[in-house]
Image (cartoon, rainbow, N blue to C red; front, side, top):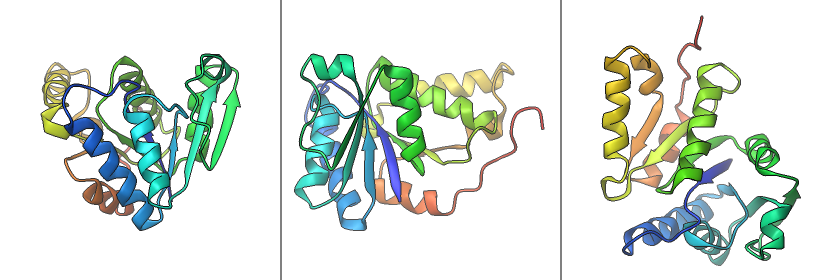
Length: 186
């Protein structure tokens, strides 16, 4: 199984975000789950890839040439595919992935989450998506999503298709049992 992980190009405040990235990397390697991610060495992205590799796992990166030029590419990965832009990066990661795991991150992480989630709502893929809610990082967003449902902009079953957990092993178990809901307009 290959899991695409979206996470931060920054380390975040405090050690919990980096610790979570290390734990995800160790669990992936232990269970033979291959990492697919954005190919950078910075932030929790780099911590995650280093943890996977240090534990003997496989890490596949997809990164735009512009970031390679800025010397943020992780050059020690199992594979590193260099693409033209962020659109190709996301398409390349999606092509490689069987599931998505979202760790805490910034605007780019949220953009990636919402794009693959909207693709799922439209039936463009049936891959599971999980949020790893480290230290309650995603609680404010989850409240916003509840409000979105309450206001009629997001059906409850579409909101509930996001797997929310604090444990990477639970996310992997739930990936195995995942059944996608209906798609929008069906």
